[in-house]
Image 1 (cartoon, rainbow, N blue to C red):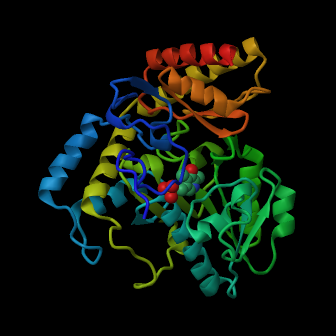
Image 2: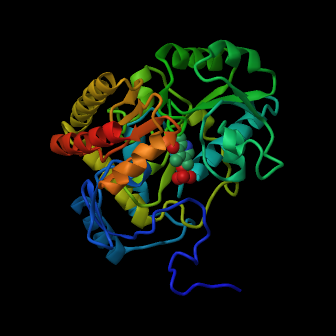
Image 3: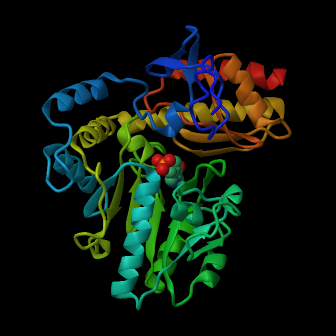
Length: 392
Ligand SMILES: *Cc1c(COP(=O)(O)O)cnc(C)c1O
């Protein structure tokens, strides 16, 4: 066994290239590393920290709930679990909730639910249409559902049954439907693909095709849900109602919780078919309730849209000034195409200058700040980005 005791990073499996610093403290839009250097954070745990780093509302909920009840087992009800489910149902078109711990797990639950529904209601139909460049998670089945090119050839063999077609191409979907198709599953805005929104016509056509062919429409809102797009849930901006929705990321405001929501007709799990040791535990569901309460405060989502417009306008100006590419997305999930410039190199240079940005594609930067990011923080972010664009 080879160990390097001088290298504290050595004991972790290398699943991503990470800078050799350690983040020790976070507050709002700011992180501080082990050298005392401060970073303006426009990644926020991958669109996770809805209210920024360590917001009082969440730390207080955690402290209160931690001293009251941590885990009563998924075999019993607990108060935060019931309250959180009620909040989600009351503010969406869905009737019932199943809580899990990660986005992948919620999506995996959606896939199981669709297959079960197909068994009961559609002659055992089980295939699901998904999309090129989509991302649904890293379990074997959600990798199989994903259209991420890098996933195509690893960890074979994959779970069968995912028929992938081009995004925003309703004709391709129509052609892909056969008697064994049970559902269509999509991200309203493809996040990892580089923030690519479904068009309104496309989303409405999917709803129509689903109705015509007796299919379930599944929205993976792990990234787009919980106020990220300026709507509580992105489907609301499309004027359609999915049958099933997965939430994750922003739901926990930084702690691990996800949720699978469905309309009554699709709530077909029988006892014993779905579960999980930590699912619906009071500590995490209490936090998710706190996040929901914050989003439902009068004016909160209006503010998200305002900051989104500010960021979009400024990115558009920057793009025009320096001959970059398209600005895409909605609310505070935005992307800037960098044209010929290497987005990862820009993100790296920004990091050196105390700004955390993500480059999901070779020529795309993604912006996913806290939903309560301030006007001034957006201005400061742009000032750093501008020097890195001109300097690269
Ligand atoms: C992040 C993400 C997932 C996976 O969530 P995990 O919590 O990492 O398992 C699934 N779908 C979408 C759209 C995502 O952005």
